[in-house]
Length: 298
Ligand SMILES: [Fe+2]
Figure 1 (cartoon, rainbow, N blue to C red):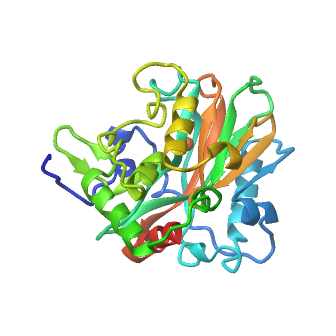
Figure 2: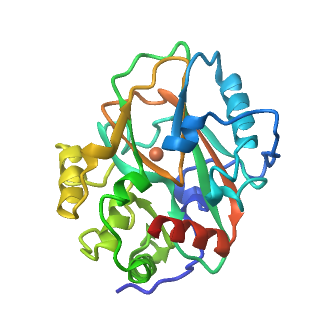
Protein backbone atom coordinates (compact mmCIF):
# COMPACT_ATOMS: atom_id res chain seq x y z
CA UNK A 1 0.00 0.00 0.00
CA UNK A 2 1.69 3.23 -1.10
CA UNK A 3 1.94 6.25 1.16
CA UNK A 4 -0.82 8.61 0.11
CA UNK A 5 0.29 12.22 -0.02
CA UNK A 6 -1.51 15.41 -0.87
CA UNK A 7 -5.00 14.02 -0.64
CA UNK A 8 -6.54 17.25 -1.85
CA UNK A 9 -4.55 17.53 -5.05
CA UNK A 10 -6.54 17.15 -8.15
CA UNK A 11 -5.68 15.79 -11.56
CA UNK A 12 -7.33 18.52 -13.58
CA UNK A 13 -5.66 21.29 -11.58
CA UNK A 14 -2.23 19.77 -12.21
CA UNK A 15 -1.99 21.07 -15.73
CA UNK A 16 1.56 19.84 -16.26
CA UNK A 17 0.34 16.27 -15.62
CA UNK A 18 -3.13 16.40 -17.16
CA UNK A 19 -2.12 18.49 -20.17
CA UNK A 20 -5.43 20.36 -19.79
CA UNK A 21 -5.67 24.04 -20.51
CA UNK A 22 -8.17 25.31 -17.96
CA UNK A 23 -10.00 28.61 -18.30
CA UNK A 24 -11.36 29.06 -14.77
CA UNK A 25 -9.15 32.09 -14.19
CA UNK A 26 -10.20 33.91 -17.35
CA UNK A 27 -13.90 33.04 -17.79
CA UNK A 28 -16.82 34.67 -15.96
CA UNK A 29 -19.44 32.94 -13.83
CA UNK A 30 -22.71 32.56 -15.73
CA UNK A 31 -25.52 34.52 -14.06
CA UNK A 32 -29.00 33.08 -13.92
CA UNK A 33 -31.52 34.40 -16.40
CA UNK A 34 -35.22 33.77 -16.89
CA UNK A 35 -35.06 34.90 -20.53
CA UNK A 36 -34.16 31.46 -21.86
CA UNK A 37 -35.27 27.88 -21.32
CA UNK A 38 -33.15 24.77 -21.11
CA UNK A 39 -34.72 22.15 -23.45
CA UNK A 40 -36.87 19.72 -21.47
CA UNK A 41 -34.96 16.69 -22.84
CA UNK A 42 -31.93 17.84 -20.85
CA UNK A 43 -33.95 17.47 -17.65
CA UNK A 44 -35.73 14.27 -18.70
CA UNK A 45 -32.84 12.27 -20.15
CA UNK A 46 -29.71 14.14 -19.02
CA UNK A 47 -28.61 15.23 -22.50
CA UNK A 48 -29.95 17.05 -25.54
CA UNK A 49 -28.88 17.29 -29.19
CA UNK A 50 -29.24 20.74 -30.79
CA UNK A 51 -29.11 21.08 -34.58
CA UNK A 52 -28.21 23.83 -37.05
CA UNK A 53 -25.60 25.68 -35.06
CA UNK A 54 -23.65 27.87 -37.49
CA UNK A 55 -20.30 28.10 -35.77
CA UNK A 56 -18.32 27.70 -32.55
CA UNK A 57 -19.27 31.14 -31.28
CA UNK A 58 -22.97 30.39 -31.67
CA UNK A 59 -22.46 27.04 -29.93
CA UNK A 60 -20.91 28.78 -26.93
CA UNK A 61 -23.63 31.48 -26.84
CA UNK A 62 -26.42 28.87 -26.89
CA UNK A 63 -24.70 26.77 -24.24
CA UNK A 64 -24.35 29.74 -21.90
CA UNK A 65 -27.97 30.84 -22.46
CA UNK A 66 -29.15 27.35 -21.55
CA UNK A 67 -26.85 27.13 -18.53
CA UNK A 68 -28.13 30.52 -17.33
CA UNK A 69 -31.64 29.05 -17.46
CA UNK A 70 -31.09 25.80 -15.53
CA UNK A 71 -34.09 25.34 -13.26
CA UNK A 72 -33.10 23.96 -9.83
CA UNK A 73 -36.68 22.67 -9.39
CA UNK A 74 -36.03 20.33 -12.31
CA UNK A 75 -32.48 19.58 -11.14
CA UNK A 76 -32.27 19.88 -7.33
CA UNK A 77 -28.69 18.55 -7.45
CA UNK A 78 -27.73 21.78 -9.21
CA UNK A 79 -29.14 24.11 -6.52
CA UNK A 80 -25.76 24.82 -4.93
CA UNK A 81 -23.97 24.88 -8.29
CA UNK A 82 -25.94 27.44 -10.30
CA UNK A 83 -24.45 30.94 -10.13
CA UNK A 84 -20.99 29.34 -9.76
CA UNK A 85 -20.77 27.67 -13.18
CA UNK A 86 -18.21 28.98 -15.68
CA UNK A 87 -16.42 27.90 -18.84
CA UNK A 88 -13.57 25.61 -17.83
CA UNK A 89 -12.28 24.33 -21.15
CA UNK A 90 -12.85 24.49 -24.89
CA UNK A 91 -10.65 22.41 -27.15
CA UNK A 92 -10.59 20.46 -30.35
CA UNK A 93 -10.41 16.79 -29.44
CA UNK A 94 -9.11 14.12 -29.45
CA UNK A 95 -5.54 15.21 -28.84
CA UNK A 96 -4.00 12.81 -26.33
CA UNK A 97 -1.55 10.41 -27.97
CA UNK A 98 -3.15 7.39 -26.32
CA UNK A 99 -6.75 8.39 -27.16
CA UNK A 100 -6.46 9.21 -30.89
CA UNK A 101 -5.67 5.66 -32.10
CA UNK A 102 -8.44 4.08 -29.98
CA UNK A 103 -11.85 3.12 -31.28
CA UNK A 104 -13.41 2.78 -27.85
CA UNK A 105 -13.75 4.86 -24.70
CA UNK A 106 -15.23 3.38 -21.55
CA UNK A 107 -18.08 5.16 -19.76
CA UNK A 108 -16.84 7.98 -17.57
CA UNK A 109 -17.47 11.35 -15.98
CA UNK A 110 -15.30 13.90 -17.80
CA UNK A 111 -12.39 14.91 -15.56
CA UNK A 112 -13.75 12.53 -12.90
CA UNK A 113 -15.93 13.64 -10.00
CA UNK A 114 -14.80 13.96 -6.39
CA UNK A 115 -16.50 11.48 -4.04
CA UNK A 116 -15.47 12.96 -0.70
CA UNK A 117 -13.08 15.77 0.14
CA UNK A 118 -12.03 17.96 3.06
CA UNK A 119 -10.96 20.72 0.69
CA UNK A 120 -12.67 22.34 -2.28
CA UNK A 121 -12.31 20.64 -5.65
CA UNK A 122 -13.33 21.64 -9.14
CA UNK A 123 -16.38 19.86 -10.50
CA UNK A 124 -17.29 19.67 -14.16
CA UNK A 125 -21.05 19.77 -14.51
CA UNK A 126 -21.79 20.24 -18.21
CA UNK A 127 -20.00 18.72 -21.17
CA UNK A 128 -20.79 19.60 -24.78
CA UNK A 129 -19.50 18.37 -28.12
CA UNK A 130 -19.83 20.52 -31.24
CA UNK A 131 -19.05 19.36 -34.77
CA UNK A 132 -18.24 22.32 -37.05
CA UNK A 133 -19.75 22.80 -40.52
CA UNK A 134 -16.67 21.88 -42.52
CA UNK A 135 -15.38 19.02 -40.37
CA UNK A 136 -14.81 15.57 -41.85
CA UNK A 137 -17.80 13.24 -41.42
CA UNK A 138 -17.09 10.54 -38.88
CA UNK A 139 -18.53 7.16 -37.92
CA UNK A 140 -17.74 7.70 -34.22
CA UNK A 141 -20.70 7.52 -31.87
CA UNK A 142 -20.87 9.15 -28.45
CA UNK A 143 -22.16 6.64 -25.91
CA UNK A 144 -24.40 8.05 -23.16
CA UNK A 145 -25.89 6.35 -20.13
CA UNK A 146 -28.11 8.07 -17.59
CA UNK A 147 -26.69 7.12 -14.17
CA UNK A 148 -30.15 6.77 -12.59
CA UNK A 149 -31.33 4.45 -15.38
CA UNK A 150 -28.43 2.04 -14.91
CA UNK A 151 -28.21 2.12 -11.11
CA UNK A 152 -31.97 1.56 -10.78
CA UNK A 153 -31.53 -1.86 -12.41
CA UNK A 154 -30.55 -3.08 -8.94
CA UNK A 155 -32.27 -2.27 -5.69
CA UNK A 156 -29.93 -0.72 -3.14
CA UNK A 157 -30.83 -2.59 0.04
CA UNK A 158 -28.54 -0.72 2.40
CA UNK A 159 -27.76 2.85 1.32
CA UNK A 160 -25.49 3.60 4.28
CA UNK A 161 -23.34 0.53 3.59
CA UNK A 162 -23.18 1.32 -0.14
CA UNK A 163 -22.05 4.87 0.59
CA UNK A 164 -19.43 3.58 3.02
CA UNK A 165 -18.09 1.19 0.38
CA UNK A 166 -17.81 4.03 -2.13
CA UNK A 167 -15.99 6.27 0.35
CA UNK A 168 -13.59 3.50 1.42
CA UNK A 169 -12.82 2.71 -2.21
CA UNK A 170 -11.99 6.28 -3.17
CA UNK A 171 -9.93 6.80 -0.02
CA UNK A 172 -7.82 3.77 -0.84
CA UNK A 173 -7.96 3.55 -4.62
CA UNK A 174 -9.08 6.96 -5.92
CA UNK A 175 -7.85 8.21 -9.29
CA UNK A 176 -4.42 9.78 -9.24
CA UNK A 177 -0.85 9.03 -10.12
CA UNK A 178 2.14 7.27 -8.63
CA UNK A 179 5.18 9.27 -9.69
CA UNK A 180 7.05 10.86 -8.03
CA UNK A 181 4.64 10.07 -5.17
CA UNK A 182 1.31 8.32 -4.91
CA UNK A 183 -1.32 11.05 -5.10
CA UNK A 184 -4.97 10.25 -4.52
CA UNK A 185 -7.29 12.93 -5.91
CA UNK A 186 -10.31 11.33 -4.16
CA UNK A 187 -12.04 11.41 -7.54
CA UNK A 188 -13.38 8.66 -9.80
CA UNK A 189 -13.77 9.08 -13.55
CA UNK A 190 -14.42 5.53 -14.82
CA UNK A 191 -18.00 4.53 -13.99
CA UNK A 192 -17.04 0.85 -13.84
CA UNK A 193 -14.83 1.77 -10.85
CA UNK A 194 -17.90 3.16 -9.07
CA UNK A 195 -19.69 -0.14 -9.75
CA UNK A 196 -16.51 -1.95 -8.63
CA UNK A 197 -16.72 0.00 -5.35
CA UNK A 198 -20.41 -0.42 -4.56
CA UNK A 199 -20.49 -4.14 -5.45
CA UNK A 200 -17.23 -4.59 -3.51
CA UNK A 201 -15.74 -6.70 -6.30
CA UNK A 202 -12.51 -4.67 -6.28
CA UNK A 203 -11.37 -5.89 -9.70
CA UNK A 204 -10.30 -2.42 -10.85
CA UNK A 205 -8.58 -1.10 -7.74
CA UNK A 206 -5.18 -0.81 -9.39
CA UNK A 207 -6.42 1.22 -12.36
CA UNK A 208 -5.90 4.54 -10.67
CA UNK A 209 -4.02 6.26 -13.48
CA UNK A 210 -5.63 4.87 -16.63
CA UNK A 211 -6.91 7.33 -19.21
CA UNK A 212 -10.39 7.10 -20.75
CA UNK A 213 -8.92 5.23 -23.70
CA UNK A 214 -7.26 2.60 -21.55
CA UNK A 215 -10.01 1.12 -19.37
CA UNK A 216 -11.07 -2.29 -20.69
CA UNK A 217 -8.66 -2.00 -23.58
CA UNK A 218 -5.31 -1.51 -21.99
CA UNK A 219 -3.89 -4.97 -22.71
CA UNK A 220 -4.62 -4.99 -26.43
CA UNK A 221 -6.72 -3.01 -28.88
CA UNK A 222 -9.42 -5.68 -29.13
CA UNK A 223 -13.06 -5.15 -28.29
CA UNK A 224 -13.16 -2.98 -25.18
CA UNK A 225 -16.91 -2.50 -25.58
CA UNK A 226 -17.56 -6.25 -25.18
CA UNK A 227 -15.25 -6.34 -22.15
CA UNK A 228 -17.04 -3.41 -20.55
CA UNK A 229 -20.51 -4.90 -21.16
CA UNK A 230 -19.31 -8.19 -19.65
CA UNK A 231 -17.96 -6.40 -16.58
CA UNK A 232 -21.30 -4.66 -16.01
CA UNK A 233 -23.25 -7.85 -16.62
CA UNK A 234 -21.16 -9.73 -14.02
CA UNK A 235 -22.10 -6.95 -11.58
CA UNK A 236 -25.80 -7.41 -12.43
CA UNK A 237 -26.24 -4.44 -14.80
CA UNK A 238 -27.37 -4.56 -18.42
CA UNK A 239 -25.67 -1.76 -20.35
CA UNK A 240 -27.47 -2.43 -23.61
CA UNK A 241 -30.86 -1.68 -22.07
CA UNK A 242 -29.85 1.85 -21.08
CA UNK A 243 -27.09 2.98 -23.44
CA UNK A 244 -27.79 5.53 -26.18
CA UNK A 245 -25.34 6.07 -29.05
CA UNK A 246 -25.30 9.33 -30.99
CA UNK A 247 -23.38 10.07 -34.17
CA UNK A 248 -22.88 13.84 -33.95
CA UNK A 249 -23.21 15.37 -37.40
CA UNK A 250 -21.96 18.68 -38.77
CA UNK A 251 -23.51 21.75 -37.10
CA UNK A 252 -24.81 19.66 -34.20
CA UNK A 253 -24.18 20.34 -30.51
CA UNK A 254 -24.63 17.57 -27.96
CA UNK A 255 -25.05 18.85 -24.39
CA UNK A 256 -24.53 16.31 -21.60
CA UNK A 257 -25.11 16.68 -17.87
CA UNK A 258 -21.75 15.42 -16.52
CA UNK A 259 -23.22 14.69 -13.08
CA UNK A 260 -26.30 12.75 -14.18
CA UNK A 261 -24.84 10.99 -17.23
CA UNK A 262 -21.71 9.11 -18.08
CA UNK A 263 -20.39 8.99 -21.61
CA UNK A 264 -17.87 7.22 -23.81
CA UNK A 265 -17.23 6.58 -27.48
CA UNK A 266 -17.38 3.80 -30.01
CA UNK A 267 -15.67 4.16 -33.40
CA UNK A 268 -12.64 6.13 -34.55
CA UNK A 269 -12.15 9.89 -34.43
CA UNK A 270 -9.55 11.82 -36.36
CA UNK A 271 -7.28 14.07 -34.28
CA UNK A 272 -8.97 17.37 -33.39
CA UNK A 273 -12.21 16.34 -35.08
CA UNK A 274 -14.73 17.84 -32.72
CA UNK A 275 -14.92 20.70 -30.19
CA UNK A 276 -15.35 19.86 -26.53
CA UNK A 277 -16.71 22.39 -24.06
CA UNK A 278 -16.55 21.84 -20.32
CA UNK A 279 -18.38 24.01 -17.83
CA UNK A 280 -17.73 23.64 -14.14
CA UNK A 281 -17.40 25.05 -10.67
CA UNK A 282 -13.83 25.92 -9.76
CA UNK A 283 -14.15 25.44 -6.01
CA UNK A 284 -16.95 23.04 -5.16
CA UNK A 285 -17.23 22.77 -1.38
CA UNK A 286 -17.18 19.48 0.59
CA UNK A 287 -20.95 19.87 1.07
CA UNK A 288 -21.51 20.11 -2.72
CA UNK A 289 -19.33 17.03 -3.15
CA UNK A 290 -21.36 15.20 -0.49
CA UNK A 291 -24.60 16.14 -2.28
CA UNK A 292 -23.32 14.57 -5.49
CA UNK A 293 -22.24 11.35 -3.73
CA UNK A 294 -25.50 11.01 -1.80
CA UNK A 295 -27.52 11.66 -4.97
CA UNK A 296 -25.73 8.78 -6.71
CA UNK A 297 -26.42 6.41 -3.83
CA UNK A 298 -30.10 7.44 -3.70
FE1 LIG B 1 -15.04 12.31 -22.03
